Image 1 (cartoon, rainbow, N blue to C red):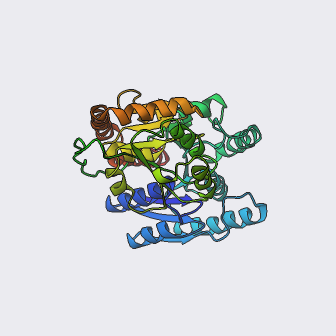
Image 2 (cartoon, rainbow, N blue to C red):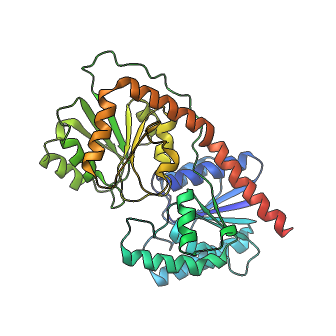
Image 3 (cartoon, rainbow, N blue to C red):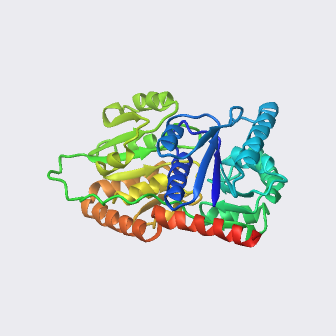
Length: 369
């Protein structure tokens, strides 16, 4: 099969970008023919080309809604589809989903849209939710299947009648295997418990609630690393205001996240809305307990009270209590970390996710034969 992937941008280490890089590479290694289209090329498109996967830029494609540029990007992609003739076009993220489905109208290419978290999920403003629900309802007839990365998102789409139930399938994200680090008790209680949150500094993420929660346990022995791109200045200023600067490191965007996680003790994802975060799966793979806001698909990866804790949205006391519990009980951290790694091995490996995607591609091609 020839499978083309479409995403809005490939200039950042986001979950969607890594997903496309790894899945396209795996498909090529399985004897299929994968290629990738995107606007905004960058570090991940460089990785993709270095791995031998053909890459093509859609020059006018971007995240903002700009009717003239959007029309140009649709026409650019349509020319590529006519030239390359992929069997399947796999579109990722809301904007790419619209552009891809529009570009493939009337062509023999089968279209799949993967929603890595709906733009109308809880936490998004009411006006935006109404607009994006309407857009997705209008676009749904122009693809053969819709993949959601969590059962929560599948149910949300059914609730708002985005598409019929047999058109929407949930496939959880997965991460490539790595050896589990050998986590042992700390040599001294004087060593701080190392907390880490890997998330871009953007409206979706709730760094502010995390920092306010940490002020409640400022006297405990912890140190926090914040890893991610975006505008971190407001959070750095808040750290100064809350007198937390000596206990927090701002690491910026990193390409060694797996190694970083193995050097930390507790993973945090305090946020406003999500789809099904790959970062939690990375933490599970690293044998870490996770504390995450109980939104969208977070509860489908974290087994509350077994592999970590789900905390209430914007509840600083709940966040502080969960972190405090893991800081104070080393054996609990280690036990939860082992349980998290076991859950990853059973349910969230990359191979498990990739095979489910390939099965779907095969099913679509068999139906059209």
